[in-house]
Length: 257
Length: 356
Image 1 (cartoon, one colour):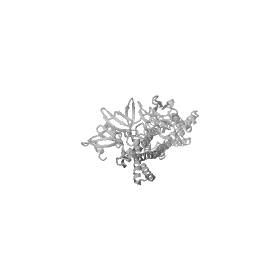
Image 2 (cartoon, rainbow over the protein chains, first blue to last red; image 1 turned 90 degrees about the horizontal axis):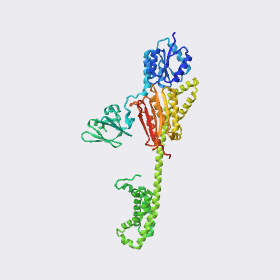
Image 3 (cartoon, rainbow over the protein chains, first blue to last red; image 1 turned 180 degrees about the vertical axis):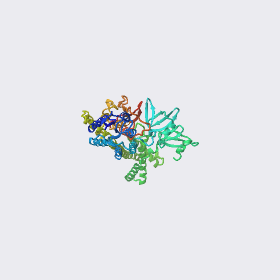
Image 4 (cartoon, each protein chain N blue to C red; image 1 turned 120 degrees about the vertical axis):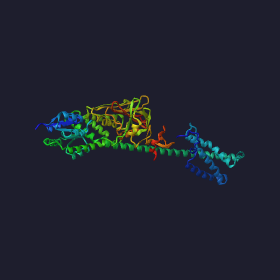
């Protein structure tokens, strides 16, 4: 039988070294390729060396362990290595793929090695169960990172020679000003490059309402809306100052109020 | 105390408190009894005089604060009002009693005696009564102040408790802890002399991240040590991707500082800036004190992947803002800036708290 070959992908160098040393102990005949520092490197090294086994850390910069596993598809036997992923560990236990927790325990690694040695004679995992497992993993890990709808949460505004990141909840209103849009917030005002039309699309409609072709107002900052002539109105803000116009076509936002 | 600056006469500010009105009425009713014995006049007539003087003095006492000139304190204004109002009040009372015929009335010697006696009586009782009233008002005010301070203290304690609970849950993230322990295990296994120092950094970090009974001794210096410990641990894990510098204004080391405030920012910089980046980046923790105003600026700046405009703001920043307000007053600010070409810089602006 030809010598088995393995690849280790982990962004933490000490832990790569440690796994390497453990493997040298429990499976001295295993050949190890260069280590990968992230998912993208893992794919490159995989293409170059075609290892039989890939040890994959789940949290890596760039391409994470799960996406890397998807890209590798059926190409190798996969062992996930993770420090603490409650959900991930649950998912592994239901799936066929092996996993290790850090710090890696030698006895546990010996079990994994024994299983790998048996499986190397058999074909790699059935693609169906593997895909289902990866989907499940991605969903469970992804839930925490990506919000359902990505609304605008920060406005980038040039103030002096610095670019301020203004939290949208501090914004009172936005008003078109020739080429730019003027934003007025808790700490002052500034110009931003986005147009009122873009902002209207990207801001949370539950919190921000367009009242006029050139005006968007934060509902939390409105003190009162005063009806005017000809199906128009004026918006008075809690902070006082500027009175904002409501034009006929946007008045319906305030009808029920 | 705010006084109306408009020309409108502040009627409501001049009206006596109900409690004072009751006390004055009761006392003049009582005082009229012995006076009736001495003068031999009918009780109602005596009370008419005494009550009228009492009422005028009460109005003078109540209106004194609102109508006093700026340079006169409220206590002195009230005493002066009583002393000045006493002869006028008695004169007015006689004027009303004699239906304007007061000149003829005051020509009689026994009427002059009565006038002087009434003025002396008015002063004799008016001055101590107003002193008593002022003392009880002052006590009431102090009680209200104490209550206000108590409420504020409760609010701050509640916020602090919240922060401690969050620290327990969030700061010692299991992923962080197990990963760091795995690294230390690797150092020990290969006999690295680095294991000891790294373990000490972890201990310092864990000790600081544990909820403490007392925040009062936290200083900027202890916070910066904590930040260094954390960054050393993270550098152990990603030596090729993380560079950092930690410095602070040399004269601000002993500054009282809310524990974990900078660490929260540094953890954010690692978690959301450096860790997702394949090439990593640098974190700079720094500060300066404005030599003229004494205002302090601290910053945590990273050259990581930067922040998307749609990144949901965590609770960390909002908590930090309210803790800074609690610590340094409402003028304290937390600003976010973009770093070119990519990265985020968070700045804390505040004035050192005056020692109470």
